[in-house]
Amino acid sequence: MDWGVLLLCDCAQVWLCCVDAALNACMTRWIVLVLWVVLVLDLAVWSPPPAPGQDQWVLEALTGQWSGKNPATVALFNVMGIWPLLYASRFVYELRARPIPAWPFILGGMGLGAFVIFPYLFMQPTPPAGRDPGPVLRGFGSPVVQGLLLLSIVVMLAWGAIAGDLSGFVAAWRTEQLVQVMSLDFVALALVFGISWVRGVSSK
Image 1: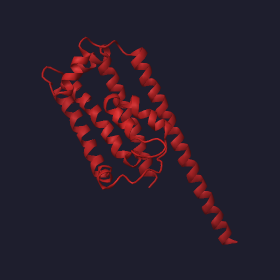
Image 2: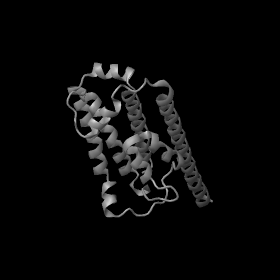
Image 3: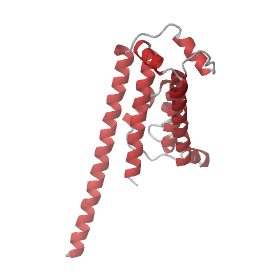
């Protein structure tokens, strides 16, 4: 009788853990969707119009021509290129997963950030059974690499805050589409990555 009760308790505990994991995944999925909708609405409706010469600014920033530009804005721009690498490291086992591989979305995220990455996370909110990525990608997905990428984000933002004109950045946020959209994109990516990291730690 005692063994039967213990077995029943174990089964109930396993079932509750599965339900909790499913609820957490569902909650994360809808958080991702809401954030993505907010980003799209901000880009299409709420954000200010593009500043004159915005495309030229982006081209120069991509080619390292930072002279005369606010370091705070440059730092944020560079960080937005690191986030997709961090997501790729986090989801390295899903890059070639089926039925939806992550790599096209990660690649698109290099230029469009959460606008491209979040649809993948919504369509495939729980880690699928991906193929072994091989030793190189396994190394890329290690906690050490993720830590270095996070550190690079912190260092870049610290440089922007120290060397940049924060009041000028705030003014640009109010009047320039690129700065506002990048800022909200950064917050959304950081929030979802944090949720993913906490879920990963709590599941171990």
